Length: 116
Image (cartoon, rainbow, N blue to C red; front, side, top):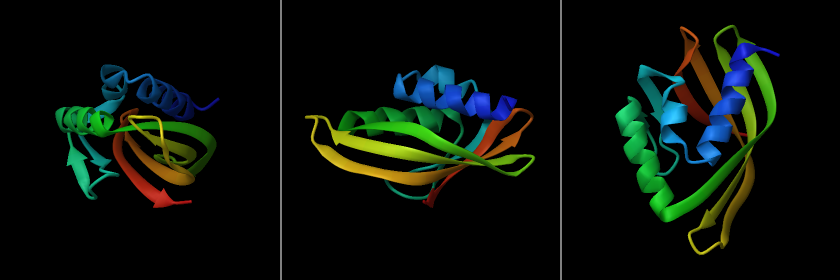
């Protein structure tokens, strides 16, 4: 299997386990990460840490990859089933969305969200 796809599978596993440091280890120092709650991007590992810490204080998201599609040597789109509950367990969303990862030097340098 492709090493970038393996890295992304591990990234999703670590995100779902709330292992922020495990995910951040796979990102470049200047990573641009889509802010799915407010729009735009957050930049750098510490901004991502703050974004997720806030996100997880208001919702409980889970993401399950269902397909990987190479766009070119440094870009992979992942179709993911995104399941979001509020903190009381009420289902807020269950949909397939596209996550696009751009790599540099074997790490994720940019993350964007696309419609399925």
